[in-house]
Length: 309
Length: 309
Image (cartoon, rainbow over all chains, first blue to last red; front, top):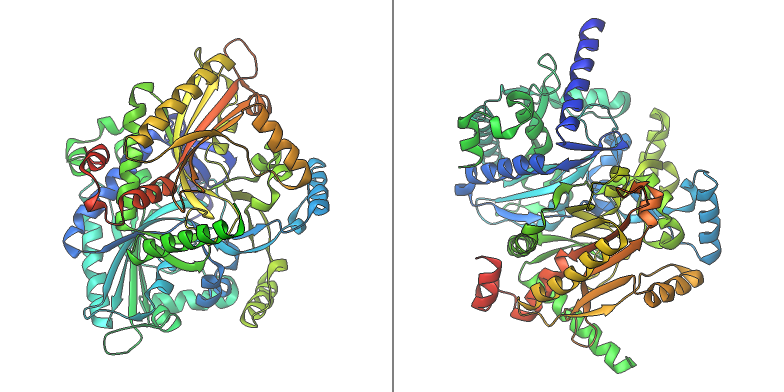
């Protein structure tokens, strides 16, 4: 993109954000990437999530839900802090006594920074919907592997003015563990299914090979490595602007990374391969409002029938 | 409670936790107060939440949803850090450069503490479902005031072995703003309605005047003050043990605290009074499993018909 195109894209993104606010679909809070969701926004989000459940019903996934915070040791063990330190959200609290608490109060009322008054707890915000699952999978998996689905809140420290780049959002996730063949066949099946599902809602969706935003110079190498090996795919849809579409669904093949880290074993004793896919639920909802207008009551009948059959 | 009673209560609490795990209603993660929720647990939680919605349908509340993180300035402005510093969860992230990131990685891989490598972000975990709403209510309210309902994840830093004392859990909340008379009449109506709703599910529920766990010596005074003025009520139900019932619903009258802090004004220009009530959704679900057994399919017909009409 050249400078003029970038400016147009930024204006379009701002206009879209303002439209969401005007129609009370989102409620700003004064912090970029953190906003309330209005009733109609949630209504669409729940309908899309239910549509995903219907599409996957015959797969027989186990269902579970994890809270927005996870064991800090997960980030340490999977190497998250090596790759994405700038995106992390670690939870700190106050461990002091009476006197320290008084000093903290005074500091806050004087408008001074209070970073140093708190210490790290055992938990961090969860940066990827599937992370809390892996440590619970330790051990030998059933023959044919395992399939689990979740809807979790995730956190990324990347404040932005774009509606689609949130600090806190929900992901509807599926995780498959098994042999390499089982896992890749499942991932490919979902690549087609996810694309079809989004297109059936009148969205101009297309897939692409992608990479994660690894930190720093070493990160650039990791990104290009990931692209070369085609470990990550995304499905993109225009939301902020047509020229610069937004990833609304991502597919990650982890090879044996989680299998060996958490001793997730296949029936024949090998470290399991895993893959996951996640729909960024808020982004899908925003894509729908962008494509069909800010009033869901006036969306095309075909789209409404898919969402509310 | 004497020592023998306390020991019995602890054994009962442990037995209940183990029962939840055995039936895969909750999935431990290695951190106290942080666990996954199984499919049946969520199925009951959604049904109870829908029952609350039906009970309140004619009240016409606005619906919204806030993410698990909120603007840090809310905690600063409402005095949360003066009253509950030990319960807070502030979000820290990494703001350094390439070199700092390498040092952080080395520190983590060497198994050393990494508290000092991060700095405070603009957000904290949300400790009370209603907090993010108040700053969005600034201004003059409609005649008759306002009523809003939300289902939000909240965080309290109080790791515990008891299933009912979670670090991260969901609250179905209602907030009423208006004149003192409007707000208190609404609170009293819900005290009766909430009690009736829980009793209709075969729970042995009873109300009580309550207080918040304010920090330190000054906190003790604030707690007894709060009790004297009857600003907080709770509905209690046996979950861990019959002798030591658990609060599953709490009602708070804030007088003009939030009204004046955030300039929430009634139609005649006064700082609005506010009150809120919240069902601790996980606790209600646990109370149901405690009362009727670990298999929801075998619960009494009357209870099942209320939940899944």
